[in-house]
Image (tube, rainbow, N blue to C red; front, side):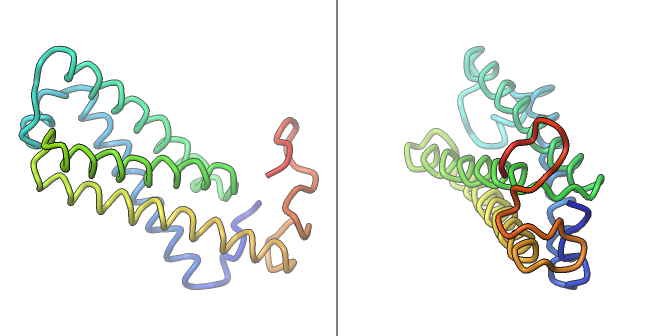
Length: 159
């Protein structure tokens, strides 16, 4: 996609924020994988073997999704599909943490994590909308197709 809409200052700033968020996601997911008991303790949550294992597994998925978003943004791909799924992962994580707080699995301070994830997810989705809007109007750096489904790398299909 080549950095769609990068002439727009707001798009550039949002893109940079998403890069920072994705680095934070990889780092926090890595910590969650390596030391799930420590992270669970910070959330006043149970640290039994099952909980630690499941929390570490969630951390692994955070590393994978965050790494995918880093890769996409660093390469200036701005793939709407990557942004969609990264955004949905973040919004879903926010909801899951909020439910955990409501069920008293996590301390109320975990709502800060949920808020960060919600804002991050909405940022991904907003950036996706911006680049798709620029693409549909044939803006600078776009592939120029109205639907964003034109030719792309082999096997990418419709976006």
